[in-house]
Image (cartoon, rainbow, N blue to C red; front, side):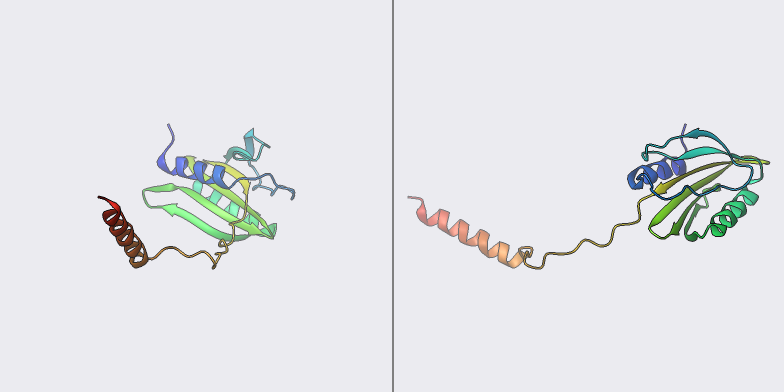
Length: 151
């Protein structure tokens, strides 16, 4: 059964995922992938690290920094203290890493390349929403027209 945090993280990744033309980042030493997917529609790799959750957090941050990635987001929830979601950025590539505690001496890790956030959409200034007062006036004139044309 998925925890709410895992469901959120998986949904977030699927919405933002795209295949990457850049080289894959290297996860910390000791990472053993037990599942891979090159489709760009799921986590690229999922596996484990043979170390505590706290040490895994530091190892992931150090490994990504060493490769030139900057930490953009570090997401955690007090309700799930042994789960962490990171977003690292390098050039036009974002890498999402999810960590969770398996037991005292091992941690789970999933990672994937995600699409950078889209810029704010441009607004076509020639199209304006109808204001409530203009809409009310239009409705009133339509009602008056209907009333005057009825016998």
